[in-house]
Image 1 (tube, each protein chain N blue to C red):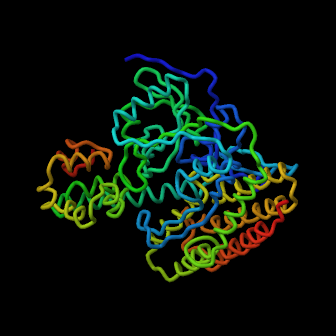
Image 2 (cartoon, one colour):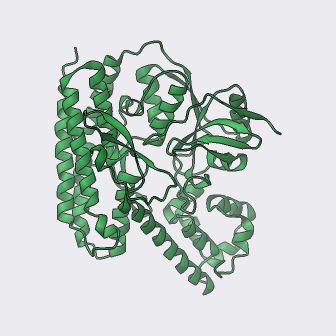
Image 3 (cartoon, chains in turn brown, orange):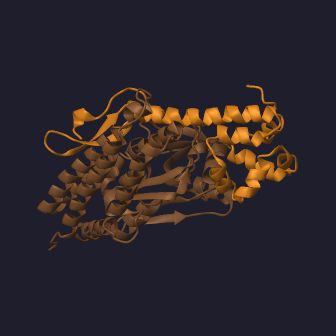
Length: 338
Length: 134
């Protein structure tokens, strides 16, 4: 088999976060201007979850956004961009369908497991199933990958791709594909942004569940404070490394998505001219800076230059984040949308 | 974060620059490429080292016939008992049993094949594991 389908006019865009960037990149290549922060914000994906009973490498799970695939659904719901979304039971059928779409000239977004992607991390193969990437062409037995986290395009063999698409485990991809089928002529941004912002604010201010939203940040701060009674230095070091990774390193666009959301609010202000949005955007940058400074407090400890970080200070910083964010969401909730 | 505050320390585990959203002088957002921040790099290294160390211990345990080779391959693939049982879709206690030499001896080939797929190796490597560093 030596088929060769390459899209000469496909443009590779790099982004901060895998899912929002691949959605925005696919939609842009379909001829509709949708920036990455807009895709992220309009699907109300900002959040904070601290789940001490769900363990990642033996440490509590910390997430700064909603589940995988929610950005695709959110963009479809709020903006009316219709995506084709499919999962498969049969592996061969899924690969054939991908070939067919590529031969028609459609770049396809896929959900894959990071561990089976040889180009991704090299030696450090983390089992994580929620990564989104784009395949835009095929050359013989190799697929051309435009991974939105990467600044260049690469190739992957059919075998590896099949393994990655059908990895087992928590949030399985099951061969999930998505691509835009229809983009609307115009979008009612006022209504869409209003709904998105209101939902984010309501979710983050929820008063019942202590592991999500502002309450989540507070209980997370308490957990950080409790670490000072922990004598196991290695546990503490890997825990703080985990926090640092999830907040700053693994495709978040910095500051646990806060900067990206600030960019969304700014874009919303440019579209709608509501002064509260501008102010909220400025405050959101402050919140991002607070998150970033709090993580940076553990930097010397992570690099093994210091025996014990200042847990009190760190916890207070996280509480500061909670305060700043609460102000923002209360403000967003009170906006008078005409 | 201002454009000039984006960390540029030059070391990353991923072989690419990372996009960060920063504010320029006009107050507009820009995508700025950051080529790494040291604590982020060392966080990766810490977790990697942690699992490497566990894998070495598992290797020693295998040599003393206290553990099955699966334990070594588990830590090598950055899994622990919880995540391995989730990825294998098996109860924790079953996986735990397979991590002992007795339980490993009773494993059938199809289950071993599943383990090999999750742990990023192949059946032969697991079966012929001697405990010596390759």
